[in-house]
Image (tube, rainbow, N blue to C red):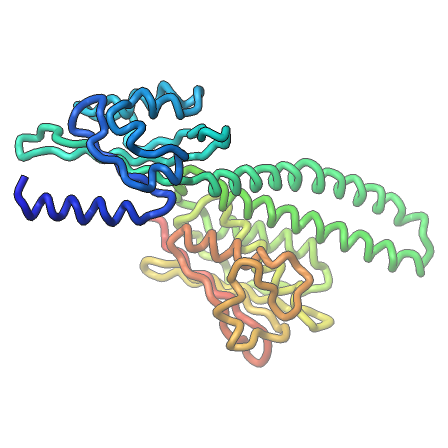
Length: 348
């Protein structure tokens, strides 16, 4: 190896030695590590020198359920690894467990022969904890809160024939609040699914007309006090999205009514098909959104105009549209109100 190459190797290794929660290792001789960065001890809780020339010592630290799979990849120095990217659990000396994501990179010479295996290990323990918390939240939302509220609403509807005019107003408030809770559980469920999925997002052709017609019809039933106007016949076109596209328009249509200060909220929906994109506009006659808030309302946890909502509806919209490779933004409506614009790529 030339002096310049050696220098680059030293600089590269020195860089990794400064990183917390990341370990770099290289193998040129099967069964032995040529180099392990200082970040190894941050994750494993033991000095790198303890495993420098003894792979078995390292394997002893791997959780028993993951050990065979990790061994197969580490010991495949002269061949392609079974998995170039894999996860595993490390059991530290104090008994605590760290999750590690490992990338194995194969380096070859000009003849195509494998000369070195480089591994990069990243501590993903906090990510795993968040995923577990989100899954617990998802189960609670889907099975506990939603089911209990369905029962409450059922009992409430049975009372409609048993209350007087004054009591009817209170009952309607109870039912409206219950329906809002159910709606929030739908948002939370979609939010969790969007954030906790480990699989690469699958985008497929989705009928935009079908999604919009369905959501518009459901919102008309949910908000009889509002007027929904379809400016023109919806074009029959497919966009690049997935089954959660309905959640995008459900949240935007709900938002147009729930944050409206008019006695008769009016929501206008239109769709324009362009060469490569489809642009959906949802306009309301509400109070509008100040210019300084237009760029932040899609942020996680933001609540527009003092909304009592959960603050994740618009964040979910932005997350999903971005995953589809599209754009969403807010504009002023004339004379008052807001227009939410969603631009999606047409399916090819």
